[in-house]
Image 1 (spheres, one colour):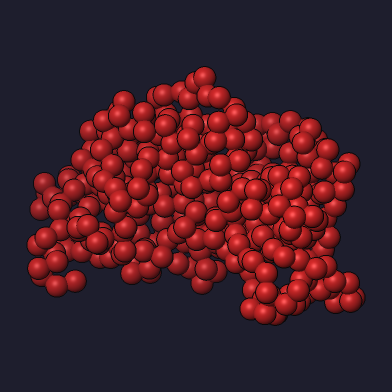
Image 2: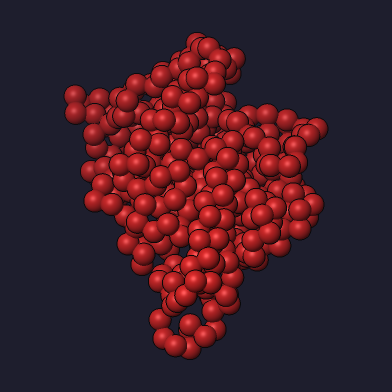
Length: 362
């Protein structure tokens, strides 16, 4: 970075990138600790990734939503779109705790600055923090698998990230790809208006018909945590908990809507085909295949391990103690994001105190 860019950067103790559940939790704890910080968010309004969810995902269908620290979400109408309920809740939270989020700000890169500080670059300005809380989540990086013939398909292909709700699939033959909660929700909705649905997954889905208790939750988080400790790309906590066997899911299994088929081998202009010759005609392929962590802006810091992920201990990036990732890997759930926000701030307090003491001795 040139000298002009360095001079223009605003000095601050901590930059928080992202104002979803994890980012707001981090900002809350930073404020309580009296640490100077700025919160940057690329979204146009409060609500994190929730504001982009499809209208038919009502609050009552949400797969777990834990309140932000210090303020409960009460009296939410389960029939209202989750984007509205949670968007309003996040906005009220920002106002109540005086969290001044700068938006929309797209952080393009975080790199080494001068005098031990980082340099955060965006189209809206530059900041020079002593530490950074990265809370960018995954919504901006939908994962699209590649299959032979995909480019020849004459129908429509779309991802959960731009799923508009079931109304656009009336009378269509729809193939839904993916074994997670979103795929199941899409199937249950789309099947009510489509001509036909087909569900395909790489692995047989696992349904759990018992309450997911605290010990099982800890075990699931531990599996994800082990991956990030080894520098592997994280899996979501939800991916290892299985699918809840709700009344709606039971009805889908009984009706055959949730009759899963193994993954197809080839996409043709008119549908999908398996190696044994089976073929399903399709007008739409809906990829409910998940997301990847949105961390490309951290690339200049060279945090990635050979396994493809960022090795994390707690919330701290092993390769750079100034960087904390919240809402990443084991903290990707809403309750995990809350805890990670507090844990990151405790670590940052220790870092800043140590740096201040060392400067005083110099």
